[in-house]
Length: 500
Image 1 (tube, rainbow, N blue to C red):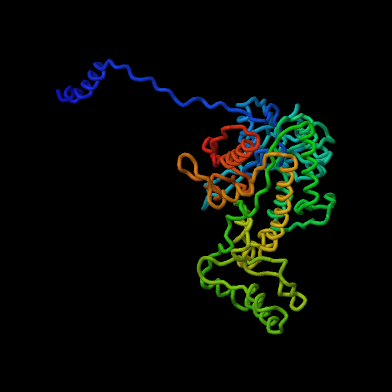
Image 2: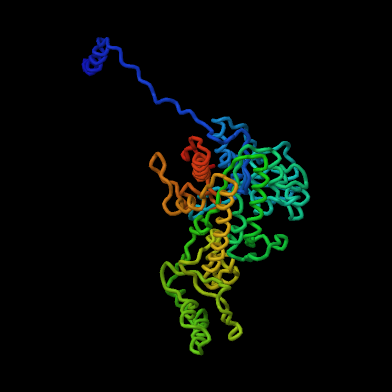
């Protein structure tokens, strides 16, 4: 009986509902949006650029990453208003590794490992099946070539399989170039695009920065054949290269969008490792400060200051001091310091890092290791100074900033000259780093390494969710320029971190 009585209220509601003969009003949803292309023609879209265009992430190019490239997201939007197919030169698997003649020339993508004391990126296990010598047939709309500098996109033979072994060609382009002598921009322009995107030039600065400033600023040298891999491209070479690319891509009247370059100091590769990660006990700190260690170095500096050979400011900058507890700064080599070895060979160009120094991401697994396994005190970053490649000093950052300013002025000027949509990727990535972007579910995508959702585990390239934010910036610029109303993409539809 109790069960029966408990059911009565629901039965009453049912009877009342049945007695109501009023037909409820029909409800209709909002009118469907009619998307339009405005003045643009998206029927044949070609994307030109480097790793950022290809969909490179987690230190590799792999199938899922290529599908999550921002050009592929744009192509899906373009398809709503007459856009055609978008062909991608897919890698052979989701590992990302590449071989040439049986030798591995590119490693697998990174995955977050939880096996150690703290989560760390490690290459995913397995043997990649992408062979550079196996040429892909056909033409491809995504002409993003990882590693390419601006002038290399114009270089004949950059897609030569033979040249890959010689170090004169790019293995990614070699897989799908039209011939051994082809250029990236030539193959792109040959497709007769009705619309294109161009985002190129990041590597002209980035490789210098990620190398800790070990390259050379080539401003004033307009001969790229004399450049080394980590050198900064002369601004005139950069400007000429981009202009030549735009001439080729607009020759048949194509519209397009061009993006400027982000500041490298806004990416996790330079914002993750602190300058002062060293914990010390009292005994170790006392030893490091003693005359047997850095005490002698400090005394030598003080002597030169007393002789007015160096200033009090430089003495303070170079004096090395440790304390018991957390927060000790690492010791680094700084080539911009005054060379004092002529006065005392022991006074090499070293100092402790400050908050103005940017430690590169890869230093996180090097700091604290032993320079000599047989000498327990030979700790890298403590007893043994870190080499130049592990840190981007303020002087090196200034060199990067000067080049970046020149490059971005060129890009803005070319966007106006060729009447293209302009994407301010510099401001976009700065905002991602400073505040992040709130999503529909209340979450925030930001630049925090591994957990922010904006960047992949290499600390340089966006994660798929970050690429979606980039895609929306392109779409906003395109809609504004060409009076289209493309809907954009939802970053939450894409992962912020691949979990295997």
